[in-house]
Length: 79
Image 1 (cartoon, one colour):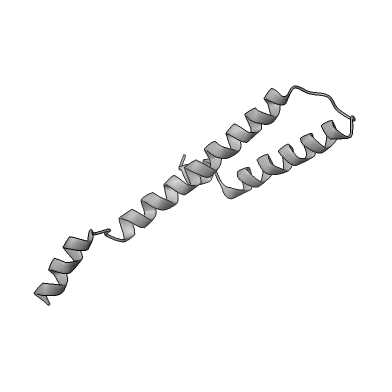
Image 2 (cartoon, one colour; image 1 turned 90 degrees about the vertical axis):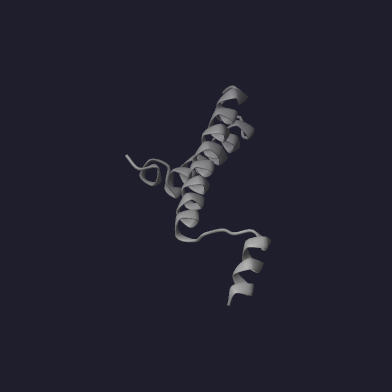
């Protein structure tokens, strides 16, 4: 399974909504749960966002060659 399919923006949005609703329910006293669950969801959200960013960076690097300033100057001198 591709990482884009497994960790999509929709997953990130769902995690954010769950965190928001859970925090609101706890603040209103409707539901009581350990803050460890909040941090677990926060960690999952970070993993999802990091995976999305990593996949996009890999696609960018495959599409464009990143060169240093010195390499650029050498290319410009040859032209």
